[in-house]
Amino acid sequence: MAGRAPGAVMGTAHHTVTPTWAEELLDQLRPNARDPRRVVAWLAETVAADVCLTDADGTPLAGRPVPADPALTADLAAGRIAAAALEDHGRHLRLLPVALPQRARAAVLTVARAAPFDRRAADIVTHTAGVLELLLRAHQTTAAGHRLERAASDLRLAILQLLMVEDTVSARRVAAGLWPGLLDTDTARVYVAECHPEQRDRLVRACLDATGERALVVRCPAMDGHVIVVVPGGTDADELRSLIDGRPGTFLGGSTRQSLARTAAAYGQAVSALAVARFRSDRAALYAERTRPERLMDPDALREWTRDVLRPLDGLAHHVRAELLTTTRMGLQFTAVNTAKVLGVSRNTVRARMDRVEGLLGADFSDLAARAAVHLALNTQAGLGGTVHDPATRGRTGLGGLLSGPAVRTWAHALLARLDADGRDLRGTLRAWIAAGGNAERAAQRLGVHAQTVREHVRAAEPVLERQLLAAGSDLYEVVLAHLALGDLPEPALRPADRNNPDSAVHG
Image (tube, rainbow, N blue to C red; front, side, top):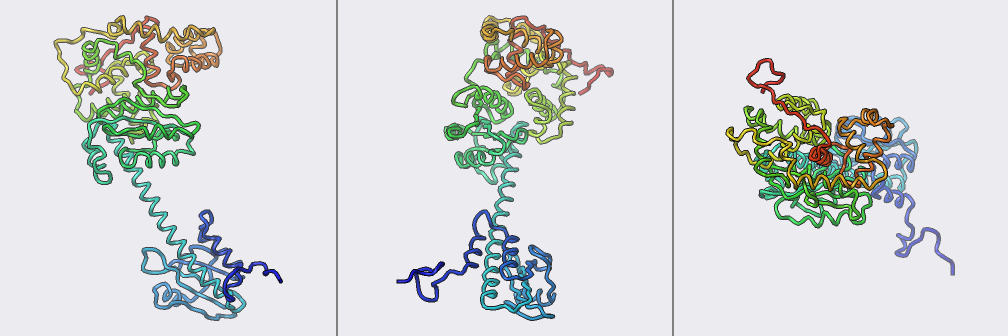
């Protein structure tokens, strides 16, 4: 018995062979090959013709322009003619409409070749027009989906930026339109997930799938590999922790539960916890997992010292004061560029606001000790809830008094003593580096070593202290406070500008 010819299939007599062109045309519908330009190019090669796909106005969408009667093309686009076949100056033409999604007028597929169209060529043109219609409809749907996704992403970022500047009323109003009930809460945790930048879109989708509409998932505008997730109320975030399993190079840091108005502070906590997560085997950490120096200070004295330090800002308009406080709090935690991206303002605006605060407080922000002191005051202020300063209690406690308590000193000694186990003088190098404002070259000159040695020592101290030091932020400021508590660094001088003196450098 003779075998079947190549390409034969089971079935009735008139379906015994699958045409090669049909297989090739179907192949154009594969997910990685859905391009109308490729289909038009394939059609031109398959039927040995010039092929062009134009929109209703005659603008080419794919292929090379093919001269055709404009009136005929207009009739096809308007639906007055279903198809056209003609001979023109030795050319044989076929014109078919290709419906465009959400448009009254169709595109037109024009095919011109020297030989007449036989049955095979005519079938190929007809079926290709159908495939092009499917692809254009799919592209329109995909494009609309991408636009909607981008709009939702921009909206989530806008909500986060409103929360960052403590405008919870506006944030709730914006969120209510698309995610009703999302921010109907007084508290939230902030998580920051870190991955390779090229994997962030997949991580964003995983976070959205894991949390549904119960969390605010935002691509960090400052760090390409970060995803910010605000988890409101008592929502369980176990789904987020499970996302890092099976994802090498992915880490998760989370804040303590904070009021929505303290989203900026919670974000700083999450970034700080993320630094700890990089040193942990499970690649996840929460901010509350270690003792903070401010928790060891006399709370009444800390609050009074904070009010005293920030008093020069009290005379400013409320919205101006809020902008300055939030911007400076974040600017001390991150770079000016990253702060600008997170807040949605220019970096010049960030620097101008911080310069103004620097002048009002009489603080030198090039001094790490001064930055640590102001950072402590700003974070404490964020938890005061707008309590009014009592002038009668002014000046009872200075920073030295806050740091002189036995609990703080014990904490500071235990923290820095971790460095003593290393054969290198990590502690001495770190102290000199902080005194030099975090400048490795100046610290190296003081120590008589190479600047690269200073950087290596500081980098080696990070896993020992479980704190990120080379990137300025709350981790570094804690280590600075520890040095201040032990008397290893001089107390910074804060000299508020005289608001009543017209010669003062800064005025409110």
